[in-house]
Image 1: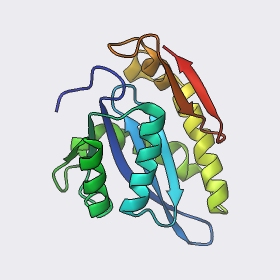
Image 2 (image 1 turned 90 degrees about the vertical axis):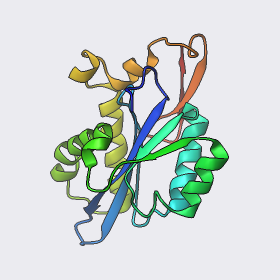
Image 3 (image 1 turned 120 degrees about the vertical axis):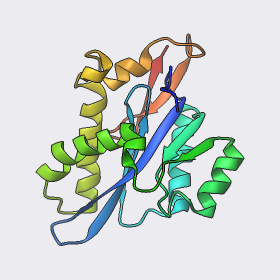
Length: 187
């Protein structure tokens, strides 16, 4: 696989698990744009089926455009009939990494490490609602505040805004992490 040359060409997906202080486990679906490093979504719930993943991806496509390719591991949610049908219907190429080779999905694995170190390991979650809010706040900071060395000191949002083929003079509606309101970015 080649490195994407503009936003929206390839997304990477993976799951991260954590627990509430009561011991109840929950999972987080992380979606990354491989070009900009932008975290497109952190979806936290106690159950995330293939059908739920397709609904979340449909929402992301409506907000960010359809990627050419999605990369994931071979987890049951990502190999479900719902995902296979969705990818075929959307005409999105789905690439599965080799089993036991997380380095083949390095963009999202690197992100997951940051998420774990900077947020999950530092927080005792009392409820799923609280976890979702903390994740939304962390995502907002990750995408819009902190410069990233891999992006030449830019934030992921700044990297995604760079003018590239097919993005000039367009407006993209982006869901705000900290609320359900949408923001518009002009290119």
